[in-house]
Image (cartoon, rainbow, N blue to C red; front, side, top):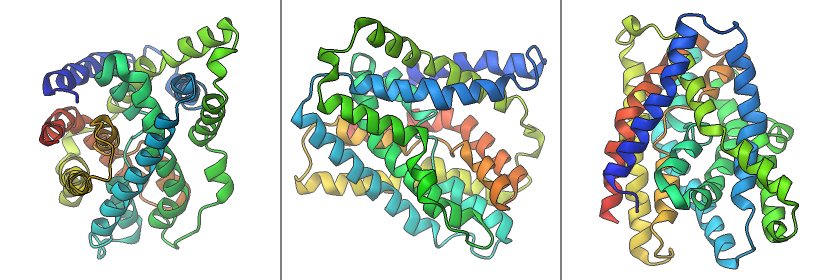
Length: 317
């Protein structure tokens, strides 16, 4: 179980890594579309390779069963949060109501969650990333189904194709195949090295991108919408507490394996700030994109405080 000091050190490391993004973007030391290109590389190349790299190990039935547990815990976590979110902000204008609900439900479980888990769990970082794919699958499926209906004023339906062709889902499918066949035993060494090198770029790249987005945030407008602040508080503090309570009750039944990592990984992923895709979904489906961008920026900034605080709950296990 990660100790508070370890989590705090990892978050401080993340803060240092996002500083270059703030500086380079704020003072325009890079081309205008540099961050966009870096984001695409991270989402479509680096992060999938980080997931695949975690699966490059000899097949182990226990790990596969644990992955199934993580998937179920991801479903439980999202279901608990969804029930509460359905009761909130229902009288808000449609363009903002969907954004508030979306940013409360969906976390940055992959883009920011994977680097944080990798840092927190140290030598066990790869297995933590492997287990994290359970929540990532839940996240991607729900984003393009429930999430699309949530953020669209007319309640448009998402598409199965968008779910299946998501880079995170594809990487999980490839990773499981490689794991099931124990591909690590016969893959060429150069292929293993390339995978590991690309996987290692995720943390610095992701943090640079987070810093670049924060550089554009207008901190003077942070208190202009109390609803936005309530949504951020729900995302970072209240919902993680509810989810942990659900996990704790399940743990008391004795049906879960005693390995604390199985609860720590999905819990920490669901403690992450609002998903960066919130702004994109708002732009694409008729929500208030500026409102979404402000919410994501505030939650990302405050998560640097909330993640270590929420991790203290893990000491109760």
